[in-house]
Image (cartoon, rainbow, N blue to C red; front, side, top):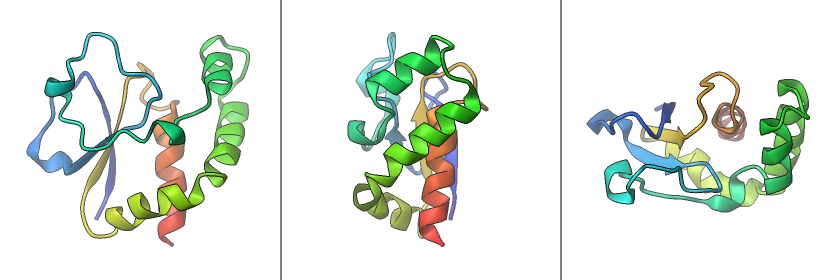
Length: 117
């Protein structure tokens, strides 16, 4: 199947499949009922320190990606069921970041795809 990415501010759609919020904090201005989130594994989101450093511009994209991948490796067993699920159904990683190309969901999708191989 597939692993999709979608901003939490976009309307949920039937073909989103299993929707997983991948941010540590609930996005401002979004009602939980409207987000249609199936899972919210906060422990696999970037650590507070890493998230703050990236958003403050203290870390570039490459450094953020490397450090977040290192954090994800410590969560490998918690992520395995999600990677397995993506093998037989569509999952959508939902995030709040404005930048759709440089955010934790992009890195998490890459890591989950690696786990599936």
